[in-house]
Image 1 (cartoon, one colour):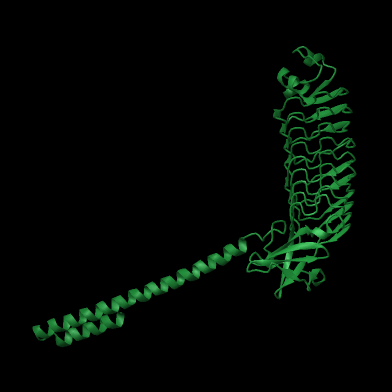
Image 2 (cartoon, helix red, strand yellow):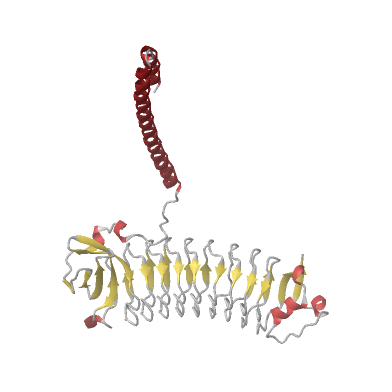
Length: 386
């Protein structure tokens, strides 16, 4: 552009001797300058676009680097699962072969291959093997048309009421669906780290004695182990963040349970009817104890830690052996009938901020204790602390 302007000045001086020549020259110069300006603008726009794209790519790369890595405790895309060769079944015979997949039977167990979804699942025993299997091995992958499809799920009701006593689960398993092993004769189970979901009533009403859960389980659905009358000890992994109601309901042999630190709520009737549970340590991260959590359990004493904000209805009702309770200042909400029919409850350590007839009445609702405002000071049960 600078060169063009310099040349223009020289030409003006050279041809300015005649008016006609000057006018003709100015027209030519104007067109040349216009063309040059347009070209420079275009080049500038291209350069800006290139710089913007470069900046966007750089920012996108930075954002990608700042994204947290996908947790191993969430569902995994089946296409990214590497199935160990030892868990792959290579010689399956298929039927109902179609565009979306096929079915096969291995060791008496029916498997569905969902080719369009890139995974397989175990459906349960074939008709001829029902009520006849005692040991079950679930394969981790099935080779179909040259591709290995990982077995990621055990279907709902898969082994319901089957007489199986033992089970081998693969390292590819992600979900154990509802009632998968309900009313079986299982004695123990090892749940692999790949499994994130234990479905509702999946092991309910079994004589299971040992449950080992690896880090990876995030969700345990309602009644998952309800009625497991021989289950004595359970340690839930730290990855568990979601527990539904009645998970250990009526586990009459249960003596010890360790809850994860990520849990904020003990759900509805979690330990109801656990007669052998004489003591329990509530983790310091718990904020809510929902209705009936320890109802009809064998607790003899309980220390509710500082941090708990809400105690629901009937939480300790019908605990015949309960004698001593500590309630911290952090509790803001008291449900009804909390200690109803706890006939041997002798001492409640409770903060002075709760020294009201309303709170006292809620605590003793459903018992034979009739309270007045004067009873708060002279009560043989309440011990107030600051």
